[in-house]
Structure formats: C-alpha cells, structure tokens
Length: 303
Image (cartoon, rainbow, N blue to C red; front, side):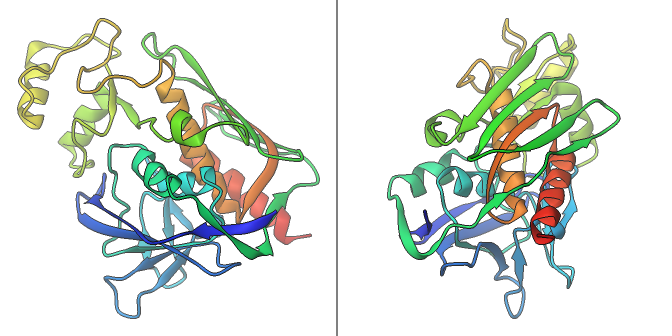
C-alpha cells in the first residue's frame, strides 16, 4: 500500500477550546514521507512542530506538542484522528495561533470536508508501525492501554467513570469501520461539576454550549442551572430525563465512548505512522494514550 495525501487545501476557522483564541487553520497536501507536521504561520520563520510522541508537552484535558525551540501547538488530537481515519499519511497543518480550533467538539467537519474529495496516492510505500512484542501502559487508577502485534489496526476501548448516567460504554474501530459516520461526529464530553470548576478558573475560554456533551451526574440547584443559562445565553437550558444537559442531542447512545476512541486514534498517530496492532484501552485518556504512543515510537526506532 502506498502513502496518500490530500487533493487540495482545506481551511477551517474557529477558536481554541482552552485558550479561546481565534485561529485560522489550513490543512495542505504534503510530499511523500513528510508525515503530519504543524506550522505556526503567526511566528517568524513559520516554525514546524512534528506530530510525534517525543514532542508531547502537555496532556491535561487535551494533547499539546512542542518543538525543541519551545514552539507549541495545543489540542491536536481531533485533526490527527481525522487524518488517520481518512488514511492520510502526509499533511501540513498551518495555524495562525497556538491552538487547533475546537469546532463542534468532534472531528466531523474535518472528516466530512476532506473525505468528500478523497485522497491522492503517492509514489512511496506507507509507513506501517509494527511491534514485535506486547506493550502495556498502566496507571494507578486502573486505566491501561495494551498494544499487541497484529496484521492491521484493531482498536477496542471501554470507558467507566462510575457514572449512573454514562454507564460502561464500549467502542470499536478497525479498517472496516466508516470513520466519517461512526467516529468523527462524536463530541467531547464533561461532567457538570467540571464545567463549573473550569468556568470559575477560566480554563475553557473557548468552550460554549454547542461543543460539548454535559453529563449531569448529580442533582443541581435552580441557581446553578440559571448560572449556565446566563453564561451561555440559553434560557431554555434544562436537564433531560436521561441525565444530560439539553444543549445538544446525542448522535449515539455511546457517543462519549466513541469520542474517547476518536481521541485514542489521534493520540496513537503520534507513534509516527499507521499502527498495525491490536489495541485494548480501558479508562484511557491523553496522558496514558501518548505514553503508549511514545513507547511504540521508541520500540520502532530501536529496531
């Protein structure tokens, strides 16, 4: 199988979820063997940040990268997931600010716009990442990501927050999954108490009521709900019988699990290519995902 790139440029405009800063992002075709690189066009000489696990700098609520000169790009996981799900080997992602636009909290717009045109085959073999023996990353919470040798990508994921609203959710992705319809539309999520904390501490400057599923795990007061109505200028905001804020309707019953799969696909792309492995993830997040990607990258480089 040969490498593939985009047929044309694709431009997206929005704001960063955590910084709230407006950003224009253009995803461009790239020569064979480029991989995926981010370019900060707002900085002199347009510095490049390679999408590799060795460049991961922060994993608090998103995945951020930083090159050796300290130039960073935040919240890269959704666009990396889209490019991986669409089979794009090589792409240049130009931004005129530090954070990738959050859009609707999913990878839907990236996947739909790029996917409708397809990709272009290039004159170089695809870089598949294969491992010789299992790799497992764990943390004290019981979360883990296990990567086992396989002939192609096969990902299974389980989330369990101990939530009576979410329950235990599972998600699957492999070469036969329609990424555009089954994974890309799935939006990020959070619990109401997290929203309260982040708003109080100015941590989601670009967040709004349209780019996240809000889980209402515990009863809230009329005062708390009114605060949300005032903040987001939605007088009809309420809690649904199933325990979610009625800001958006779920695409799937397990949309939150599928979004975690979206993140996992994007984070593991940081291993440097298309991963041929059986991946099993439990309660995974950006920290453990990117640690797994780093271990895979190191194993590949040591061959």
